[in-house]
Image 1 (tube, rainbow, N blue to C red):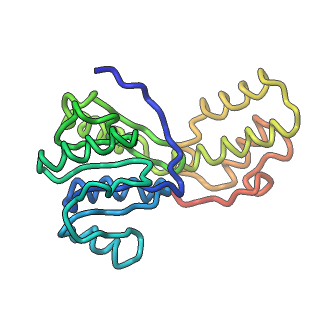
Image 2 (image 1 turned 90 degrees about the vertical axis):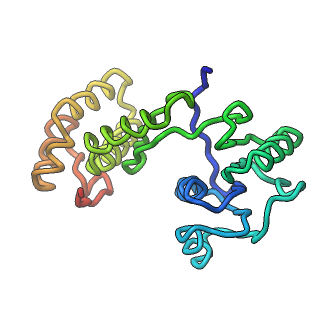
Length: 224
């Protein structure tokens, strides 16, 4: 099956997870990081989900799924391991036209969740179309090792440079050349091993006067 790749803004939107185990916990963490409002429906919760509940990060209905539970949801996830519940959730979601991810029934799912590596606003995802999640996890681990936290900082800097260039009415061609040049000068490596002064020198050399971390309104963040 071919999927259409898309990033969805779910800030403030209700996501319902049916299930309280490890799979549900992983999905919950990703939803919370994206700003969703999460309700978990399950008689029992994993340790991680209990911690989130104690912090007030999620709402919990301490029981099995019932018809009508999906009202008002923007996204629905079923992760119970019980195929009868999965079918019921999929049917209700289809009736309400709610996008659903059914962990043990990909043929009843409207979407899959790719393996992901996040570095600030940089999001790297891997999908096998549901054929082999193990391979997706392997590739994700390679990406995790290859792209460190400094890439989030790189994106933050490049985004600020781009905004300033747009405000200064720089032409599209000139702006692309400046950004390409910054990328080609191994900005991630500079951030890993050198001082903020080295970044400032590179910014001024390529983008010109007025471009430094402080002049862009940025502070140097330590890469881990």
